[in-house]
Image 1 (tube, rainbow, N blue to C red):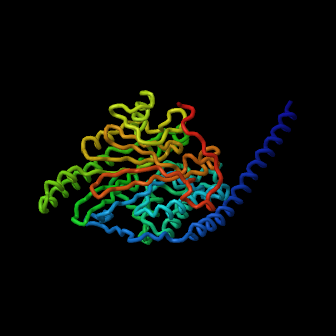
Image 2 (spheres, rainbow, N blue to C red; image 1 turned 30 degrees about the vertical axis):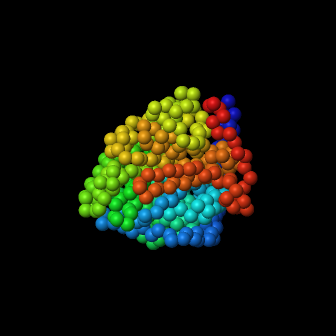
Length: 425
Protein backbone atom coordinates (compact mmCIF):
# COMPACT_ATOMS: atom_id res chain seq x y z
CA UNK A 1 0.00 0.00 0.00
CA UNK A 2 2.83 2.39 0.91
CA UNK A 3 4.64 1.58 -2.34
CA UNK A 4 1.48 2.26 -4.35
CA UNK A 5 0.90 5.60 -2.64
CA UNK A 6 4.52 6.54 -3.21
CA UNK A 7 4.24 5.75 -6.93
CA UNK A 8 1.00 7.75 -7.19
CA UNK A 9 2.62 10.68 -5.38
CA UNK A 10 5.57 10.64 -7.81
CA UNK A 11 3.23 10.58 -10.81
CA UNK A 12 1.14 13.45 -9.43
CA UNK A 13 4.30 15.44 -8.70
CA UNK A 14 5.55 14.91 -12.26
CA UNK A 15 2.17 15.97 -13.64
CA UNK A 16 2.16 19.09 -11.46
CA UNK A 17 5.72 19.99 -12.50
CA UNK A 18 4.79 19.45 -16.15
CA UNK A 19 1.74 21.73 -15.80
CA UNK A 20 3.80 24.42 -14.09
CA UNK A 21 6.43 24.18 -16.83
CA UNK A 22 3.77 24.54 -19.50
CA UNK A 23 2.32 27.57 -17.72
CA UNK A 24 5.77 29.10 -17.47
CA UNK A 25 6.52 28.45 -21.14
CA UNK A 26 3.14 29.91 -22.15
CA UNK A 27 3.69 32.97 -19.93
CA UNK A 28 7.16 33.58 -21.40
CA UNK A 29 5.86 33.12 -24.94
CA UNK A 30 2.91 35.44 -24.31
CA UNK A 31 5.15 38.12 -22.80
CA UNK A 32 7.35 38.19 -25.90
CA UNK A 33 4.45 37.80 -28.34
CA UNK A 34 2.42 40.54 -26.64
CA UNK A 35 5.30 43.00 -26.73
CA UNK A 36 5.74 42.47 -30.46
CA UNK A 37 1.99 42.48 -31.08
CA UNK A 38 1.29 45.70 -29.18
CA UNK A 39 3.94 47.56 -31.15
CA UNK A 40 2.48 46.27 -34.41
CA UNK A 41 -1.15 47.06 -33.53
CA UNK A 42 -0.23 50.55 -32.32
CA UNK A 43 1.67 51.15 -35.56
CA UNK A 44 -1.45 49.99 -37.39
CA UNK A 45 -3.57 52.47 -35.40
CA UNK A 46 -1.20 55.22 -36.53
CA UNK A 47 -1.56 54.26 -40.20
CA UNK A 48 -5.04 55.72 -40.73
CA UNK A 49 -5.57 59.05 -42.49
CA UNK A 50 -6.55 62.16 -40.59
CA UNK A 51 -10.24 63.00 -40.89
CA UNK A 52 -10.85 66.22 -42.81
CA UNK A 53 -13.56 68.25 -41.07
CA UNK A 54 -14.58 71.51 -42.73
CA UNK A 55 -14.51 74.43 -40.27
CA UNK A 56 -13.59 72.09 -37.42
CA UNK A 57 -14.57 73.47 -34.03
CA UNK A 58 -11.67 73.96 -31.62
CA UNK A 59 -12.58 73.85 -27.91
CA UNK A 60 -10.94 76.13 -25.37
CA UNK A 61 -10.80 76.04 -21.60
CA UNK A 62 -13.01 78.47 -19.68
CA UNK A 63 -12.15 80.31 -16.47
CA UNK A 64 -12.95 77.17 -14.43
CA UNK A 65 -10.67 75.01 -16.55
CA UNK A 66 -13.52 73.19 -18.35
CA UNK A 67 -13.35 72.55 -22.08
CA UNK A 68 -15.85 74.64 -24.03
CA UNK A 69 -17.06 74.51 -27.64
CA UNK A 70 -18.35 77.85 -28.96
CA UNK A 71 -20.73 77.62 -31.91
CA UNK A 72 -24.05 78.85 -33.27
CA UNK A 73 -24.51 75.72 -35.37
CA UNK A 74 -25.39 72.17 -34.48
CA UNK A 75 -22.77 70.17 -32.58
CA UNK A 76 -22.27 66.57 -33.71
CA UNK A 77 -21.30 64.04 -31.04
CA UNK A 78 -20.46 60.42 -31.79
CA UNK A 79 -21.06 58.01 -28.94
CA UNK A 80 -18.94 54.85 -29.03
CA UNK A 81 -18.89 52.15 -26.39
CA UNK A 82 -17.32 48.81 -25.50
CA UNK A 83 -14.42 48.80 -27.97
CA UNK A 84 -12.89 45.80 -26.14
CA UNK A 85 -9.31 45.78 -27.40
CA UNK A 86 -7.61 42.70 -25.96
CA UNK A 87 -4.06 44.01 -25.98
CA UNK A 88 -2.59 40.52 -26.48
CA UNK A 89 -1.49 38.27 -29.32
CA UNK A 90 -4.57 35.99 -29.21
CA UNK A 91 -7.25 38.44 -30.49
CA UNK A 92 -5.08 40.12 -33.14
CA UNK A 93 -7.78 39.89 -35.81
CA UNK A 94 -10.49 41.10 -33.44
CA UNK A 95 -8.50 44.17 -32.40
CA UNK A 96 -7.79 45.03 -36.02
CA UNK A 97 -11.48 44.79 -36.89
CA UNK A 98 -12.40 47.01 -33.94
CA UNK A 99 -9.92 49.69 -34.99
CA UNK A 100 -11.22 49.53 -38.56
CA UNK A 101 -14.80 49.97 -37.39
CA UNK A 102 -14.00 53.00 -35.24
CA UNK A 103 -11.90 54.63 -37.95
CA UNK A 104 -14.46 54.05 -40.70
CA UNK A 105 -17.40 55.42 -38.73
CA UNK A 106 -15.50 58.52 -37.62
CA UNK A 107 -14.15 59.15 -41.11
CA UNK A 108 -17.67 59.10 -42.57
CA UNK A 109 -19.58 60.89 -39.80
CA UNK A 110 -16.93 63.58 -39.10
CA UNK A 111 -18.13 64.38 -35.56
CA UNK A 112 -17.12 67.47 -33.60
CA UNK A 113 -16.63 65.28 -30.51
CA UNK A 114 -16.33 61.55 -29.85
CA UNK A 115 -17.29 60.24 -26.39
CA UNK A 116 -16.43 56.63 -25.50
CA UNK A 117 -18.32 55.16 -22.56
CA UNK A 118 -15.88 52.61 -21.29
CA UNK A 119 -14.48 49.14 -21.80
CA UNK A 120 -11.89 50.30 -24.28
CA UNK A 121 -9.65 47.58 -22.87
CA UNK A 122 -10.45 43.91 -22.34
CA UNK A 123 -7.26 42.24 -21.07
CA UNK A 124 -8.97 39.07 -19.84
CA UNK A 125 -6.13 36.52 -19.98
CA UNK A 126 -7.97 33.47 -21.29
CA UNK A 127 -9.36 35.53 -24.20
CA UNK A 128 -6.59 38.02 -24.86
CA UNK A 129 -3.48 36.32 -23.47
CA UNK A 130 -2.68 39.44 -21.45
CA UNK A 131 -3.03 41.00 -18.01
CA UNK A 132 -1.63 44.35 -19.09
CA UNK A 133 -4.52 46.79 -19.54
CA UNK A 134 -2.47 49.82 -20.63
CA UNK A 135 -1.49 48.81 -24.22
CA UNK A 136 -5.14 48.75 -25.43
CA UNK A 137 -5.57 52.31 -24.14
CA UNK A 138 -2.32 53.34 -25.82
CA UNK A 139 -3.47 51.82 -29.10
CA UNK A 140 -6.86 53.52 -28.94
CA UNK A 141 -5.35 56.90 -28.06
CA UNK A 142 -2.96 56.56 -30.99
CA UNK A 143 -5.89 55.90 -33.32
CA UNK A 144 -7.90 58.89 -32.09
CA UNK A 145 -4.96 61.29 -32.19
CA UNK A 146 -4.15 60.06 -35.70
CA UNK A 147 -7.73 60.63 -36.88
CA UNK A 148 -7.51 64.16 -35.49
CA UNK A 149 -10.99 64.51 -33.96
CA UNK A 150 -11.69 65.76 -30.47
CA UNK A 151 -12.48 62.93 -28.09
CA UNK A 152 -12.83 61.87 -24.49
CA UNK A 153 -13.54 58.71 -22.52
CA UNK A 154 -15.23 57.38 -19.43
CA UNK A 155 -14.20 54.07 -17.86
CA UNK A 156 -15.99 50.72 -17.78
CA UNK A 157 -15.60 47.74 -15.46
CA UNK A 158 -13.09 46.00 -17.74
CA UNK A 159 -10.73 48.95 -18.15
CA UNK A 160 -9.08 48.15 -14.82
CA UNK A 161 -9.90 44.71 -13.39
CA UNK A 162 -8.54 43.74 -9.96
CA UNK A 163 -5.92 41.55 -11.68
CA UNK A 164 -4.90 44.17 -14.27
CA UNK A 165 -1.36 45.47 -14.39
CA UNK A 166 -2.41 49.10 -14.02
CA UNK A 167 -4.95 50.66 -11.67
CA UNK A 168 -7.82 52.88 -12.73
CA UNK A 169 -5.92 55.89 -11.40
CA UNK A 170 -2.86 55.01 -13.48
CA UNK A 171 -4.96 54.63 -16.63
CA UNK A 172 -6.53 58.00 -15.80
CA UNK A 173 -3.05 59.52 -15.57
CA UNK A 174 -2.33 58.17 -19.05
CA UNK A 175 -5.35 59.92 -20.58
CA UNK A 176 -4.45 63.13 -18.72
CA UNK A 177 -1.24 63.39 -20.77
CA UNK A 178 -0.94 67.04 -21.90
CA UNK A 179 0.87 65.91 -25.05
CA UNK A 180 -2.42 64.68 -26.52
CA UNK A 181 -3.65 67.32 -28.96
CA UNK A 182 -7.26 66.20 -29.33
CA UNK A 183 -8.02 64.36 -26.07
CA UNK A 184 -10.33 66.36 -23.77
CA UNK A 185 -10.17 63.91 -20.86
CA UNK A 186 -9.99 65.55 -17.44
CA UNK A 187 -10.08 64.06 -13.96
CA UNK A 188 -11.66 65.74 -10.96
CA UNK A 189 -9.52 64.32 -8.18
CA UNK A 190 -11.92 65.52 -5.49
CA UNK A 191 -14.62 63.06 -6.58
CA UNK A 192 -15.07 59.31 -6.34
CA UNK A 193 -13.91 57.53 -9.49
CA UNK A 194 -11.86 58.82 -12.39
CA UNK A 195 -12.66 61.09 -15.31
CA UNK A 196 -15.61 63.01 -13.89
CA UNK A 197 -15.69 66.16 -16.00
CA UNK A 198 -17.91 68.59 -17.90
CA UNK A 199 -17.62 69.99 -21.42
CA UNK A 200 -19.78 73.02 -22.10
CA UNK A 201 -21.25 74.29 -25.34
CA UNK A 202 -21.74 78.05 -25.69
CA UNK A 203 -23.14 80.25 -28.44
CA UNK A 204 -21.51 83.44 -29.70
CA UNK A 205 -23.39 85.45 -27.06
CA UNK A 206 -21.67 83.43 -24.36
CA UNK A 207 -24.82 81.58 -23.28
CA UNK A 208 -24.27 77.95 -22.24
CA UNK A 209 -26.58 75.93 -24.49
CA UNK A 210 -25.60 72.43 -23.38
CA UNK A 211 -23.37 70.69 -20.82
CA UNK A 212 -21.81 67.31 -21.58
CA UNK A 213 -20.88 65.31 -18.50
CA UNK A 214 -18.56 62.30 -18.39
CA UNK A 215 -19.06 60.39 -15.15
CA UNK A 216 -17.34 57.29 -13.82
CA UNK A 217 -20.01 54.66 -13.06
CA UNK A 218 -17.16 52.76 -11.39
CA UNK A 219 -16.73 48.99 -11.65
CA UNK A 220 -17.57 46.49 -8.91
CA UNK A 221 -18.71 46.87 -5.32
CA UNK A 222 -15.41 45.34 -4.20
CA UNK A 223 -12.09 44.22 -5.57
CA UNK A 224 -12.12 40.50 -4.85
CA UNK A 225 -12.35 37.67 -7.37
CA UNK A 226 -15.76 36.55 -6.02
CA UNK A 227 -17.27 40.03 -6.32
CA UNK A 228 -15.94 40.36 -9.86
CA UNK A 229 -17.20 36.95 -11.00
CA UNK A 230 -20.58 37.62 -9.37
CA UNK A 231 -20.92 40.85 -11.40
CA UNK A 232 -21.76 42.91 -8.34
CA UNK A 233 -21.63 46.24 -10.13
CA UNK A 234 -21.02 49.55 -8.43
CA UNK A 235 -22.98 52.71 -9.17
CA UNK A 236 -22.51 56.47 -9.37
CA UNK A 237 -21.74 57.75 -5.87
CA UNK A 238 -23.43 60.51 -3.94
CA UNK A 239 -20.53 62.97 -4.18
CA UNK A 240 -20.52 62.60 -7.98
CA UNK A 241 -24.26 63.33 -8.12
CA UNK A 242 -23.90 66.36 -5.84
CA UNK A 243 -21.10 67.66 -8.05
CA UNK A 244 -23.24 67.21 -11.16
CA UNK A 245 -26.12 69.09 -9.53
CA UNK A 246 -23.88 71.94 -8.39
CA UNK A 247 -22.43 72.42 -11.88
CA UNK A 248 -25.90 72.54 -13.48
CA UNK A 249 -27.13 75.04 -10.89
CA UNK A 250 -24.00 77.15 -11.34
CA UNK A 251 -24.41 77.17 -15.13
CA UNK A 252 -28.10 78.06 -14.83
CA UNK A 253 -27.19 81.01 -12.62
CA UNK A 254 -24.47 82.06 -15.08
CA UNK A 255 -26.97 82.03 -17.96
CA UNK A 256 -29.56 83.95 -15.95
CA UNK A 257 -27.10 86.72 -15.08
CA UNK A 258 -25.73 86.96 -18.62
CA UNK A 259 -29.16 87.00 -20.30
CA UNK A 260 -30.25 89.84 -17.99
CA UNK A 261 -27.70 92.06 -19.80
CA UNK A 262 -28.84 91.12 -23.34
CA UNK A 263 -31.61 92.29 -25.63
CA UNK A 264 -34.73 90.09 -26.00
CA UNK A 265 -33.91 88.64 -22.59
CA UNK A 266 -37.41 87.23 -22.06
CA UNK A 267 -37.14 85.09 -25.18
CA UNK A 268 -33.64 83.96 -24.29
CA UNK A 269 -34.59 83.16 -20.70
CA UNK A 270 -37.46 80.96 -21.87
CA UNK A 271 -34.94 78.91 -23.89
CA UNK A 272 -32.00 78.72 -21.52
CA UNK A 273 -33.34 79.17 -17.98
CA UNK A 274 -33.18 75.41 -17.31
CA UNK A 275 -29.99 73.99 -18.81
CA UNK A 276 -30.19 70.63 -20.53
CA UNK A 277 -27.43 68.09 -19.96
CA UNK A 278 -26.06 65.00 -21.66
CA UNK A 279 -24.54 62.38 -19.35
CA UNK A 280 -22.14 59.70 -20.55
CA UNK A 281 -21.14 56.72 -18.42
CA UNK A 282 -20.70 52.97 -18.75
CA UNK A 283 -23.05 51.00 -16.46
CA UNK A 284 -26.75 51.85 -16.94
CA UNK A 285 -28.78 53.12 -14.02
CA UNK A 286 -31.78 51.10 -12.82
CA UNK A 287 -34.25 53.38 -14.61
CA UNK A 288 -33.19 51.83 -17.92
CA UNK A 289 -34.77 48.60 -16.72
CA UNK A 290 -37.77 50.37 -15.21
CA UNK A 291 -38.49 52.15 -18.48
CA UNK A 292 -37.96 49.12 -20.71
CA UNK A 293 -40.11 46.71 -18.69
CA UNK A 294 -42.89 49.26 -18.24
CA UNK A 295 -43.01 49.51 -22.04
CA UNK A 296 -42.74 45.73 -22.56
CA UNK A 297 -45.32 44.85 -19.90
CA UNK A 298 -47.73 47.21 -21.63
CA UNK A 299 -47.58 45.04 -24.75
CA UNK A 300 -44.71 46.97 -26.34
CA UNK A 301 -46.81 50.12 -26.28
CA UNK A 302 -46.05 53.54 -24.81
CA UNK A 303 -47.19 54.37 -21.31
CA UNK A 304 -47.58 57.71 -19.58
CA UNK A 305 -43.98 57.47 -18.37
CA UNK A 306 -42.21 55.37 -21.04
CA UNK A 307 -42.17 56.58 -24.65
CA UNK A 308 -40.37 54.22 -27.03
CA UNK A 309 -38.11 55.86 -29.63
CA UNK A 310 -36.03 53.13 -31.31
CA UNK A 311 -34.04 49.93 -30.85
CA UNK A 312 -34.53 46.90 -28.67
CA UNK A 313 -33.07 44.86 -25.82
CA UNK A 314 -31.12 41.81 -26.98
CA UNK A 315 -29.67 40.77 -23.62
CA UNK A 316 -31.07 37.71 -21.88
CA UNK A 317 -31.87 37.21 -18.20
CA UNK A 318 -32.22 40.51 -16.37
CA UNK A 319 -31.84 42.35 -19.72
CA UNK A 320 -30.54 45.54 -18.07
CA UNK A 321 -27.47 44.87 -15.91
CA UNK A 322 -27.35 47.87 -13.63
CA UNK A 323 -26.11 48.12 -10.07
CA UNK A 324 -28.24 46.65 -7.29
CA UNK A 325 -27.25 49.63 -5.13
CA UNK A 326 -29.82 52.47 -5.35
CA UNK A 327 -28.78 55.99 -6.26
CA UNK A 328 -30.64 59.27 -6.79
CA UNK A 329 -29.09 60.44 -10.05
CA UNK A 330 -32.33 60.14 -12.02
CA UNK A 331 -34.34 61.88 -9.30
CA UNK A 332 -31.77 64.68 -9.22
CA UNK A 333 -32.10 65.19 -12.98
CA UNK A 334 -35.90 65.39 -12.66
CA UNK A 335 -35.55 67.89 -9.84
CA UNK A 336 -33.27 70.13 -11.90
CA UNK A 337 -35.75 70.37 -14.77
CA UNK A 338 -34.63 70.89 -18.35
CA UNK A 339 -34.24 68.36 -21.13
CA UNK A 340 -31.67 65.68 -20.25
CA UNK A 341 -30.24 62.59 -21.87
CA UNK A 342 -28.16 59.66 -20.62
CA UNK A 343 -25.93 57.52 -22.84
CA UNK A 344 -24.34 54.30 -21.63
CA UNK A 345 -22.97 50.96 -22.83
CA UNK A 346 -22.09 47.79 -20.89
CA UNK A 347 -24.94 45.62 -22.24
CA UNK A 348 -23.60 44.95 -25.72
CA UNK A 349 -26.74 43.79 -27.48
CA UNK A 350 -29.11 46.36 -26.01
CA UNK A 351 -29.52 49.32 -28.36
CA UNK A 352 -32.79 50.95 -27.40
CA UNK A 353 -33.57 54.60 -26.80
CA UNK A 354 -36.58 55.41 -24.66
CA UNK A 355 -37.95 58.57 -23.05
CA UNK A 356 -38.72 57.95 -19.39
CA UNK A 357 -40.50 60.65 -17.42
CA UNK A 358 -39.03 63.25 -19.78
CA UNK A 359 -35.43 62.02 -19.65
CA UNK A 360 -34.08 60.18 -22.68
CA UNK A 361 -32.26 56.96 -21.87
CA UNK A 362 -30.12 55.57 -24.70
CA UNK A 363 -27.86 52.55 -25.13
CA UNK A 364 -24.98 53.06 -27.51
CA UNK A 365 -24.33 50.40 -30.14
CA UNK A 366 -21.22 48.46 -29.14
CA UNK A 367 -18.06 47.81 -31.16
CA UNK A 368 -17.03 44.60 -29.33
CA UNK A 369 -15.48 41.81 -31.41
CA UNK A 370 -14.09 39.87 -28.45
CA UNK A 371 -15.99 39.69 -25.16
CA UNK A 372 -19.30 38.03 -26.04
CA UNK A 373 -19.43 34.52 -27.47
CA UNK A 374 -19.43 34.58 -31.30
CA UNK A 375 -19.84 38.37 -31.20
CA UNK A 376 -17.28 38.92 -33.98
CA UNK A 377 -19.51 37.11 -36.47
CA UNK A 378 -22.69 39.02 -35.54
CA UNK A 379 -23.54 42.52 -36.68
CA UNK A 380 -26.94 43.89 -35.61
CA UNK A 381 -25.50 45.35 -32.40
CA UNK A 382 -22.36 46.97 -33.85
CA UNK A 383 -22.10 50.65 -34.68
CA UNK A 384 -22.25 54.10 -33.12
CA UNK A 385 -24.81 56.65 -31.92
CA UNK A 386 -24.89 60.07 -33.56
CA UNK A 387 -26.16 62.87 -31.32
CA UNK A 388 -27.14 66.26 -32.68
CA UNK A 389 -27.06 69.12 -30.17
CA UNK A 390 -29.14 72.00 -31.50
CA UNK A 391 -28.36 75.71 -30.93
CA UNK A 392 -31.37 76.03 -28.62
CA UNK A 393 -30.02 73.30 -26.33
CA UNK A 394 -32.33 70.52 -27.45
CA UNK A 395 -30.88 67.32 -28.85
CA UNK A 396 -31.72 64.18 -30.76
CA UNK A 397 -29.86 60.97 -31.53
CA UNK A 398 -29.95 58.05 -33.92
CA UNK A 399 -28.32 54.61 -33.93
CA UNK A 400 -26.03 53.99 -36.91
CA UNK A 401 -25.27 50.36 -37.70
CA UNK A 402 -21.74 49.73 -38.96
CA UNK A 403 -22.87 47.52 -41.84
CA UNK A 404 -24.67 50.24 -43.75
CA UNK A 405 -23.57 51.01 -47.30
CA UNK A 406 -22.18 54.39 -46.32
CA UNK A 407 -19.31 52.79 -44.43
CA UNK A 408 -16.33 51.33 -46.31
CA UNK A 409 -17.14 47.88 -47.72
CA UNK A 410 -13.48 46.91 -48.12
CA UNK A 411 -12.70 47.44 -44.46
CA UNK A 412 -15.74 45.53 -43.24
CA UNK A 413 -16.09 41.84 -42.59
CA UNK A 414 -19.04 39.60 -43.43
CA UNK A 415 -21.37 39.02 -40.49
CA UNK A 416 -24.76 37.58 -39.68
CA UNK A 417 -27.35 40.27 -38.96
CA UNK A 418 -29.06 38.49 -36.09
CA UNK A 419 -32.56 39.29 -34.82
CA UNK A 420 -32.26 40.98 -31.43
CA UNK A 421 -34.92 40.41 -28.78
CA UNK A 422 -36.34 37.35 -30.56
CA UNK A 423 -36.42 35.43 -27.24
CA UNK A 424 -38.51 38.08 -25.51
CA UNK A 425 -41.27 38.98 -27.95
